[in-house]
Image 1: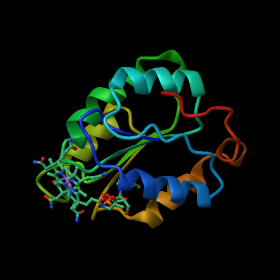
Image 2: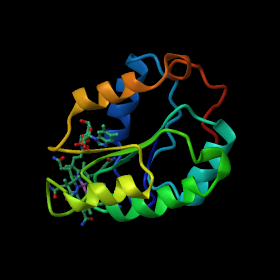
Image 3: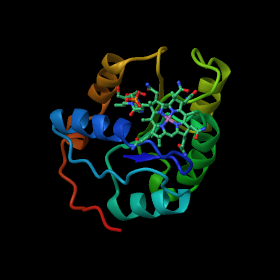
Image 4: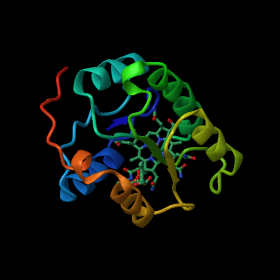
Length: 143
Ligand code: B12
């Protein structure tokens, strides 16, 4: 789990980490303002079951589109379930075409505030194969 490169907010990440841990996931929370390069590097190292991107500062669409291109250009990450959510634009919700762009860019799901809620996020998680969804990952947060 990670914020985008431009996003300094952290409580969104804390909330999501607790939510995912409650569902049985082992979470590596990379924190805020994570560069695309670092995120790709950590994902290659960890080989996660799911990549969760959170952004609330209003730049989520543009940061997300750039980032998903980087992730999908890596052979080992091109099929890893990857989602983005939060307050993704500065025009409020619904985001309309921007959601379609993010999906076309390679995200498996987009959870923009207002248009989606935690229940839909939970439902998405249930679509992941059980075998994958509860695997503990042998990874720790490194600087
Ligand atoms: C605290 C805060 C800050 C603090 C952050 C401190 C910290 N350590 O986190 C500081 C002062 C640093 C800050 C800075 C800025 N902020 Co600010 N901030 C807030 C504030 C007041 C609360 C955010 C918060 O902590 N919420 C609690 C967490 C738990 O909830 P959440 O963030 O809403 O996240 C939930 C959902 O979005 C959703 N979600 C989030 N990600 C994901 C991902 C997935 C997959 C899913 C399913 C769901 C999901 O689930 C989360 C839990 O319910 C909000 C306003 C508000 N009341 O929400 C503005 C707000 C987020 N900030 C905003 C802005 C504009 C900024 C600045 C750009 C201001 C500026 N001009 O400098 C900067 C950005 C800095 C940067 N580089 O990112 C705007 C964003 C507007 C937008 N998106 O259209 C907001 C909404 C205020 C506003 N109404 O204008 N901010």
